[in-house]
Image (cartoon, rainbow, N blue to C red; front, side, top):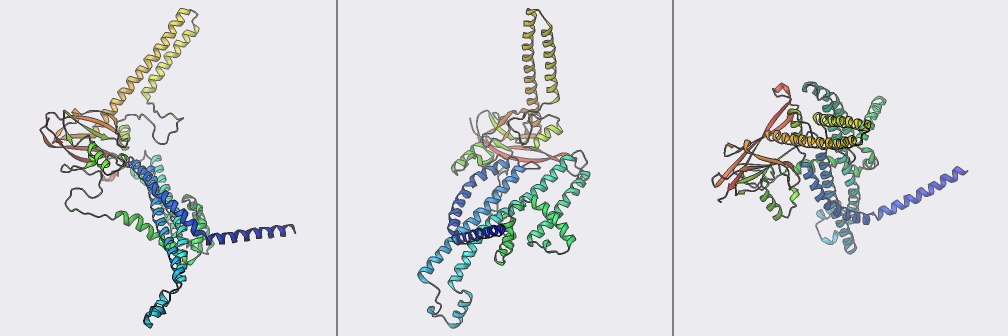
Length: 524
């Protein structure tokens, strides 16, 4: 009896909740418009921060595994989905409200009052139909579009998660098998990556065909796919929005939106970004190129002064543009020297450490404030151990000595050892910084008008004020140069790893970037 009363109470609560939901869904268009307008404003304003993050990610564009760039793509893709769908939703809702307003004034469509011929009248009554039905179709489209926006977002996150896990697996296998030959390493990568890709493909096919493998009645196949489904359901984060997906595919009308998702992604993320309008057939660089150089081209992003003026006149923040590899301080050069910034990229760290054998200064990756970010090499540790041992011996002598004068002298000696220790370390660190600088400059071959200036460069480590790009600032003497146009030609080595030995390329080798930047020498 008690259980029966409890069930009846739960049914009453469930009915009340259901009635509340039905009433809410009838009035939900008001909430949709308010939330869509607010969300559209916030999403649009977020564009600035997404662009800033994209520029930051571009700083690490030369890394093999770039999680920052991956996150940037995720933010940008999500922004595109929300901005497109929210705009369409607000326009569609506005159109729907306008149609309701028109119905209030004009009522249903009176085809007879139009005085058309019988053929057109019957055709319009059949194809256009009642105005109320048209409003109902608009209502259904608007209502489902709002949920479809979030469904697209979650699908995009799942795709990024799938490929993100795939990249992490490849990276992990490469790190664990770094000491193996490239052919053996390739076998290990294939053994792990290929099953992941194939199983993911099976899961993807099931998703695209709305549960095709789930409909197979064979118990063995169903059980095997059940485990595949469980694993990739977690890896792709699909468990967050499963209820939304199944509510879409159980209805014929909403199911069409699922089918439209594939061409939606193809159009928005592949077709549209690759469409360019070229308005010049003879200009030396293509549209949108930010790192192009030519001895016959004065491009604003290759000069500090032109870059600043360009961004200022176009009302663009100065930190929206990354210095690709090289930047001159000025296009027009006067005085005895010109300054040249040579940017350091992430692969240069591996070159210094693996090829030149120079130990790193700092740890890389995510470091918390409580962790020590410095990396001590063997020689530095030996210096510290030597003075620690000396200090320990003096402390023992002082502890065993009973002569007060001798104890004071030993205390002064301890202070002296500390001074000598830090002086030795400072000299060692300065020597290592100089060695790093000298070794880093070996990457570059700098010529002006076919005359090498690599040996006469005067350089120091430098953080560029544009976006905090790290590198070196070099000064080149130009006093003896003739007035007029000159060209700086730079060959920059780009460290490469894990190339295929069967093509005659060593495991660690270099590609070459060729950079040409003209400048104009002014009269004194």
